[in-house]
Amino acid sequence: MSKPAYALPEGLPTPAQEPVALPYWEGTRAGKLVIQKCRGCGKHQWGPEWVCHACHSFDLGWEEVAPRGRIYSWQRPHHPVHPALEGHGPYIIVLVELPGAGNVRMVGNLLGDPAQAVTIGAEVEAVFEPHDTATPPYTLVQWRVVG
Amino acid sequence: MTERTLRGKVAIAGVGETTYYKHGRSPDAEFKLALQAIIAACRDAGVDPQDVDGFASYGNDRSDAPRLAAALGIRELRFSNMHWGGGGGGVAAAVANAGAAVHSGMAHCVIAFRSLAQGQFARYGRGAQQAAAAGDDAFLAPYGLMSPAQRFAMKITRYMTEHGIRHEALRAIALTSYAHAQTNPRAVMAGRPLDAAKYDASRWIIEPFHRLFDCCMENDGAGAVLVVPAERARDMPHKPTYLLGAAQGGHHRSAAPVHNAPDYASAHFPTVARNLWDMAQLGPKDVDVLQAYENFTGGVLLGMLEHGMVRPEEANEFLVPENLRFDGGKLPLNTSGGNLAECYMHGLEMVNEAVRQLRGDACNQVKDPQVAMVIGGPMVTPVSSLILGTEATL
Ligand SMILES: [Zn+2]
Image: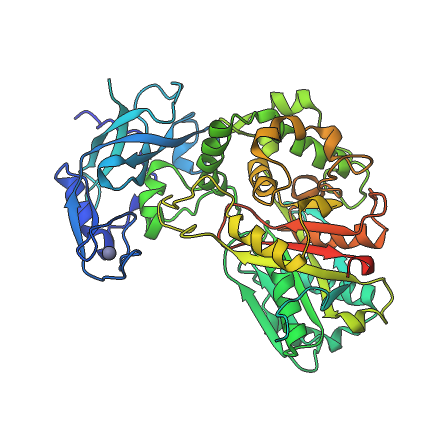
């Protein structure tokens, strides 16, 4: 059995799939990017929260959004911050804004050469990274440069 | 209507600290360090520690006020206060909270302090190593984003890229702290000088703006100041250091989850700085000496920019070591060596240094300073900052 290719080594913390964020995690399992959208005022909101920060409605819906964005900022960590990263070498973390969802931002890894030049404003698309053997299973959202 | 302000109402009458140790080298427990620093601050002010009636701290300090009060035999505890937020974001706020307690009459003689034996407890440079990450961390830790440096790095990348500020500006901040530490016998990095070549050769912690020397170290120790009403301070051994301005907080949704603060590329001081200057009735040009908290040099840069000490377009030109020296620099910075090179005491050592500068007995004494500023830990929320002044500034 071949090992699935993940952006980072196994053994990093897994995401607790908490009630406030459950539709997001269910969406990623189905290969969809689903985030909060207020039924009161229509504003997108990320990360998940119990109340809309704009109109204070508790009636927060969830909506599938286009899995495309652009790099808002980035970093290339070298220092291992977790035992699972010892000896792994540098990797890229990107902050991606989603123009199709009110410019909310998400954090993920940028796929490809870890030494690649990274440009703020570059267009990226989501790549779903399923961790099927985890208990419970979960799917991360990674990013790669378009084109 | 009476003006609501702390300006000139309270003063720091005593400062104290323990010996500063490298990470894990303190022979004493964290709580004992807190006691030592508090007693030292009281001695400096000529006050019996049993007459202290309040404690203010920050960053979830583990040395809690009731235990301190019991250990010291305090006669009556009137004020015990913990400022929310991690690290040193609350250092100036803790001093201000002590001041507010004293000015309002809730208490009379309040210690603001920080105690830290990082060897005894968890390290800051690493993420918490639990199996499942909850809350905000569920969307960060699985991507290898866990440490404080990583939480702030993308703010720095965005700001410096947008404004074309070079890494050399951050290097100047690091070199300044190390240079000042060489002539401060308290400094952990005394005898360990840093030059540009050594800085440039140091390893990357995070590209593009965090080399090893851009990052604070971890230390053990404690520091404390004693805050009393201004009129009482005039009858005490040292000339009083008056609180002229204090502000804390954060701008609109600066703590928005998963890096969604609308004004993201910020150290979180835009509104805090405005409120600080309003209370102090002063501006950036009035500051004679600046202590600016280095968790990471990028945060010092952003904190200085957001307080108006320098404009973004002049940052490359202004942030050079000559301008930041205690002797003749245009804006003397971190004159004791700061968090980077005196001791990472979550900024409390910077308040002590600001007081010593205004008393005129600092080891790297700026010539005749009247106004000193302390910028607390940047890029966390809430943040805080402080303006202190001599009698002449009232
Ligand atoms: Zn709403």
